[in-house]
Amino acid sequence: MKKLFIVALMVVAAGTSAFAADVFKVDYKVKSSFEARFAGAQNVVWSAKENFIRAAFTMAEENVEAFFDGEGELIGLSRKVDLKKLPLNAIQKIKKDYASYQVTEAIEFDRDGDKSYYVSLEDGAKKQILEVSLYGAVSKYKGSGK
Image (cartoon, rainbow, N blue to C red; front, side, top):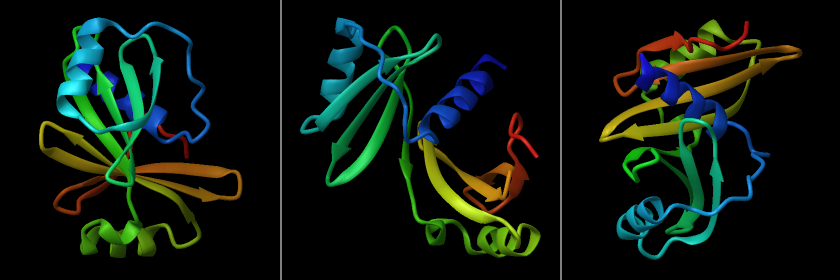
């Protein structure tokens, strides 16, 4: 349950473009872990929340976010993706079941090689977040509005 909560927090954090950076000193364990995994990362911006530390950076000309626990263990990675990168059956279901909605963002979340996608949709004041499995199963993301 705790891991699901942390993933939920990261998805929300990753889905906000205007994520305010907290001013803090990055712990040595976290920074060392980051540098070992992401040598060559550029434009690194650190922020912290209650349950994780986030590093937003550019790598291979792509914007990436890495999430760490307080001990420097990598929790997961996220990056924005084009909707067409999702499984075809998921794209078809989203277009059919959410025809009146506009896709505002699609995010790939990778936790130890276990990938899933989160798609943010809007229809006027209505907002929805969908979770898409690697195999194309689509479900409403728990905790998202209607």
